[in-house]
Length: 529
Image (cartoon, rainbow, N blue to C red; front, top):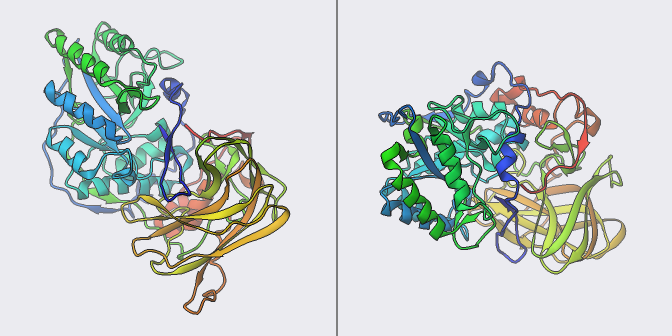
């Protein structure tokens, strides 16, 4: 997978992260959190748009037959080669698309996606911005899942299948996927060889849990073609069933999650040669079946424009297991690109309150590291007014110069680098970096910003603020009040994300949602999948 990152050079950069160990990830995903019994009721504020019913596509897998589904995550441009190869073999695959990344460098375009469906392939959902869903509050999960499907349907695509980015989800996420109108959701791993307990050789049909469809080990660069064939053969010799395969790139060594076009072609030839023994290729929708459900929009963010969440970094993020992260703060994310080595931590040497964020960069050649507002669809990134200028500020100590970087979101869900402030000097004591932006572009809908470290050294940040500027250059009033959140010590009894959801969107019926944890435990969180 990729970690979303942003570049100060006016380029939205997506840097690949290691795929090693992804094959075992499903085994580490446990059912976490307690789902409120009224969850189906609280999802009702989502806006549904009727869709014409379509006849189910399910094709029953006969006993001892093996059905292979070829699935492709993330919408990388290289998978167009897979579509071409599939067409040569009269086969079809399922392509899971994060719509906020469509038309970005290295990603499929809408024209290419339309062509894949026109050729008989299935297009599925993969969230808007490709975030770890298990680290998001319920309203943002719903926006990411539902609004991705809305965007795909708006392009005339038939969308019934979903895949979890990074295989990150909770029990509540499965319910949200269903309420967003999907008929299935695919995880990663779960077969013999990719789990730590007693596991099947193939998924059942229908799946035991259609919103947690198991797969063979995801294909990475080190995966041998014989390994893929063996997983399918194992399923066939143990009674058959459904074997979804997970691919990302189809190219010659373009990433650490790629299969070469030659190996992919050989795999298709091998599967085709087994047709006489009951092996076939079907899309996920063909196996799962079901009508196309109404299109459902995610909940609306009700915060006033410009309002920040957790601006003083007092509340830790959920590390994805229900525990407090020792690295990330709620609604803020560490991001970087280039050739450098860095580590992040929440520290108690704060400007105000009890917590701040610090990045330490012992080695630097190029790029940067920065703490920015999480680039999402509304739970964290504040809404802004096109044409409006804003005053941005943050407190810092740093051994190197720093500057403010600003990004904005457009209506499609994509995020773009926008502008940067002049440098602020190094300081061993707390100083405030402050800068007035130019008027926002007309397509801007939300804003993200943060302080950058682009040299070897340390940067500690705290107390961020965003204020609209009026026509004569003065501020249009006090900064919009930051959403109050519980102190760090409250995390163990009531997850910060749960309270955030209740405070941000009280009118959406999420007041019933509470997720308790056994006890507050600090552990290093994964910065990258």
